[in-house]
Length: 164
Image (cartoon, rainbow, N blue to C red):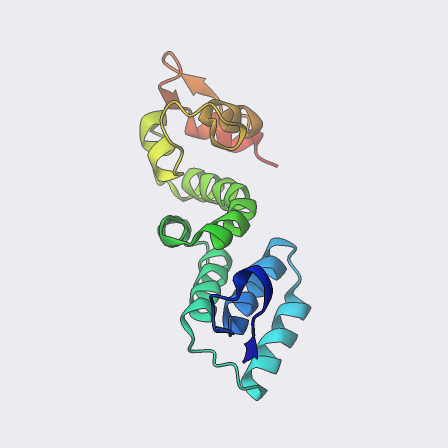
């Protein structure tokens, strides 16, 4: 613990190492740096920083949800993330959405079209959000989704063929 001086002197001690380690774990996931991540976790096992601290457990849950393709868990974690962690998770959200979209298309047993309204909710796009990261229509264009019936459905069979 070190004493804090300056504008933050109202806080008696600065002891947020586990929080920053959690950020680092997520940061390494953003850049797919598995080696740095495993070295960090190995160091944690030998240091005084506990893997059982809340911030580190949260970061590890995020990484696990991404690696296992459990996009619903990722979006649930995204909802409860604190502000700085949410900023980091924003960098991962697009990758998770793309992987989830592919998983949805290829895991369907039937060729029935997918309702775009359902898909929007499943991929956690907010309705009528016009910001770049939240525009569902732009996402579908980027994924080269084949829309039918006045853009209310995604044609599963044709959309599968557009994914490389």
